[in-house]
Length: 472
Image (tube, rainbow, N blue to C red; front, side, top):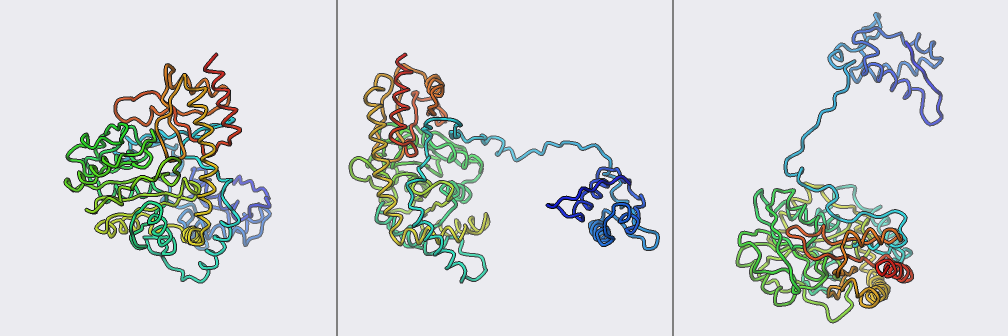
């Protein structure tokens, strides 16, 4: 028997011998029914202890690869004859047809390598977070968790965090709720997935903004929904264009994605009333409405909802950082029980440690202090970027009206979207077009400038280079 063992400090002899014997059997180099050397002979042949070969044979026998026949010795299992020695065959396993229609990248920009400045949307500046305060919050959570019973937790989330969220949305977004009205999720995307699971049956109509957020469309389509794009104008989603049979309506009213304008109060009222008449549910995705730069905050849809048709969805991906994976939903009371069931069936509950830490971070006032600091920093970056778009770049683009959020969309004049992106890339500038966000007919060419993670100096340098490139 040709077995080679190499002494490796990282791997024991027993594990090496087991893997090589098992591979020889599975690959057919040791035929079914073939007699193996005795444990004593194999140990002598390989210059290892007999204890090692005994342990290996016992493991292989327990798994059915080897059969012990007393004094006659050990043999390769006969049941392996049907598979041993066959050439591997690659079989294409076909997923459910619904999943074959879900796009790979969800049309969201990927990070670029070697760029001087990347203006991807949805990216925040982790450097502005007070990590000393965050470490204190995590330490608090670890101390608290150490004294908790070792059981499964509430699918709705930790009470400390749910209380903090209820206070926060009540003060900042006029969403009146108690702590047990809040469902903590692994980011806003899980909230959308849970809502789709409990609200959508194959063939149901779901209305989405066009242009809009691709992962929301994909979540609905993956559950078999008939996704209908509804156009937007300067006041937001055109309510009269929503299909009468729509069961779910998805909107981003505070800062329309990707164009940026807020939905007018008239449209908000009309949307809530239309949903109530039809028995539809409205998903209000308030993905970055915390950051406002002009005028007073607009009312949330949830604050106008007297019929119980709005599910308010929020996220800490823009206020903290995306890999925290923390979001929440505030549904009507009638939907909370079934959403809790869906969460429990999916992953039971989220990470207790991070929930406790974030709850403490918010209740101690550190989250509020962080938001105020982020607001000041992002306001300066936004002002710098707008100065370029409305000044030296005004010959080629115009900023869409927007008073909130951490991105600005600029509509192009006389230049192509793909060509502009390519020319900027030659200067190490990552720009991203808005065409992928359209579901129906393509709209006007434009660029989405996510500025939160780009320093003022880098904004100035990259926009100066872009002006030179477009003017050449």
